[in-house]
Structures are given as structure tokens and as C-alpha cells.
Length: 256
Image (cartoon, rainbow, N blue to C red; front, side, top):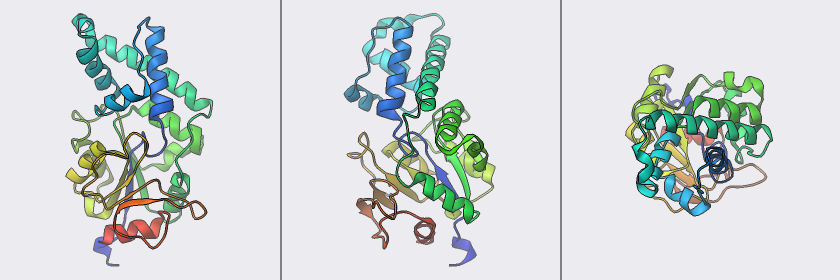
């Protein structure tokens, strides 16, 4: 492998990629916040799947209000109200994390440790808040693990969220790396579009909310990152020799 093609960094999405945070994490936290605010809103599993088409928690609340409760949109301080509601939701989400209710997906911890051992940089590129990112990492990998990541791009750090490529452009700039020396790991069509628009080769690890989405352009589409003793299932992309994603797999995907 030439230096030109050498893998230098892996950029991870968070929600649905590092952990299955959506159905039994963020959704539950949103509903708890609604209850605290005296709202009758209830985001069930099916509705939340629809709302996930909108990236960003505050954006998701606004979308829901405009579509389902337009009478609530005439608040004079709507932006501040949504921000406070979202902050309350984050509080409940952090509580769920601290209770250990949201583990990492298969292969995530193993791969992160392998990357660190090989001195390949790791970064986060997500639309979720920095507080959510830190809480998830600390609750699953340990208090010191936040410092393992060279760059954490999260929340409102860029004006346009996925599927716009802004967050990936920002992270690449902070890393001072070109896209061809990196690879992204995502779970959704919006995430894939964002990464591809930034010229990043991309692995998709599907989940129950995203498995029916379109992943044209992904390097591979797999059920998860897999483990040597618990293999992933592959839906699309380059045929792999191994049934788990390791550093060698990533290097081969970047090389092609």
C-alpha cells in the first residue's frame, strides 16, 4: 500500500452507529421531557422512525410542531422554548446512559481499541449535542475515553446538518487530513449522503430504523461491525474476507 492510500483517520457518527441510541434512548428521553413540560405529545416507535428523517434534536421538535401541532408554533420565544425543551431531553438521555441502558454496538469498542493501538486517529462527526457525545463515550468506554478522540464535531458547530457535508468538512479541516486518507462509519442514508458529499469512503452499519434506506455509494453495508466470534451479515458492497471489520478491512476499503 502506498502512503497516498494509507488510512490515517476514522470518522464515527454517533447515534445509531456507536450505539443504538434512538429507539430506547433519545425517544424515551424526548417523551420524558414532554411529560415534564406538561405536553400530551407521545413519540411512539413508528412516529419516531419518521421523525428521524430530520437530523438534529431541536430541528426534529420544530418539524413535529409544524406538522402535528401547528397551533403551538406561535410562541413569541419559540426558538428559546425549543432549546429549553431539548436541554431537558438531554438531561433524561444522560440519566439513561448513566444507568447503563445504552451499550455500544457490536465491534465498536474492539475497533476503537485496535485503531488506537495502530495509532490511527479517530474522530466524531455527528449532529447530536457535545453533551450527549461525551455522556455516551464516558458511560461505555470510561471517563478518560473522550480524550481518545482527536476531534469531536457535534451539535451546532456547523450551520447545516446532515445530509449536508458541513460537519465532515469541519472535522477534516480540524484533522488537517484529506478525505481519501480517511473513512466514515455511518448508519443512515442522511449520514451516507453527508459523508459521500465530503468525498469520504463510507461504511454503513444498519439498524432497525435504517435497514430499508438507500445506501448507494457505500463501500460496504453490514449489520454491524461484527466480532471474531459473532460475525456481521453483509447486505451490499465489496465482498470481504473477514466477517468483522478490523483495521485491515478499513485499509483495504480506503485503498480501493
